[in-house]
Image (cartoon, helix red, strand yellow):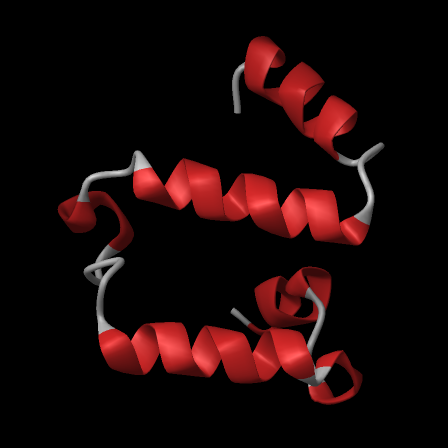
Length: 69
């Protein structure tokens, strides 16, 4: 990531979890479908994301997921 993106990330980490989720949604709305690999309006994707957000106890952290790959 560029230094500017790192600063934005650091600032975003100061937000509440709800604010970070809202920010993610806004960013995804502006990201071309081909850049994320799946269409943002994919109903199955949105349903899965909603389920994971509703039950964070069973969720895997990004750091855990990243370490697996």
